[in-house]
Image (tube, rainbow, N blue to C red; front, side):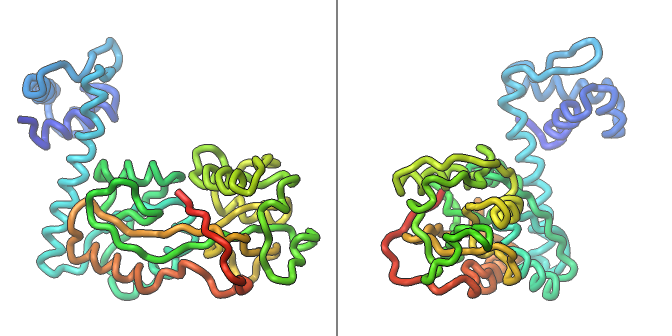
Length: 309
């Protein structure tokens, strides 16, 4: 059976690109390193690395094994951290995986409150552009907790945090920004060139889908990778679709509610039952996360709901 030491040796060889550099980093002799890699290959039933004159290359089996090796090592680190937490030590590191918009919107006030309560616990953020990337990273063991839209087919604990609403951002001098109700139907923007998102950002799928429901395909004036960039560009180019909770009260552009509203449920989820510290962070999220900000215009009666990924 593979050992954590052998998996660490495999990952280090891959990361450094050679047995020599890996042995130096691991503070072992090269023959000892080679012996452990051969033992791992014997245990798994095939070659993991192809030795080249000046480097190494993963075999097909090696490429299949490597993500699991990384996840096992990350889980071992968290195992030791969880053990320390269970003794009541208020220190260590909590790894939180989020999508881009969450790190801009609901997370900052939660992190401020957390810092005041648990100054000895470091928070390490891992940001992902798409909900699929977030869920895959969480499944691979790269974080203690994920925060984002509800995961599909997730078997671990999931806690709902609230419903996030999206706003349409326009330049302040756009005639459509003067809506007396503070709302705007997407169909009225069919002829506009949008501040769209890059295909890697999950909000690109959302924008395409809700516009299709409104009867048109959004043409892109520019594509942004980051949600924050879409917000700023929307104020000068517009229109843009952004989570309402990332819009500051002093925003220079106009922010209107979509009619019908565009919303999605945000959740926090883990692979297994959360330990005390992870559970405490999740509880704080549920209590203090500002999912929908109060400074947007009040919306009228809802005429529907557009779910987001």
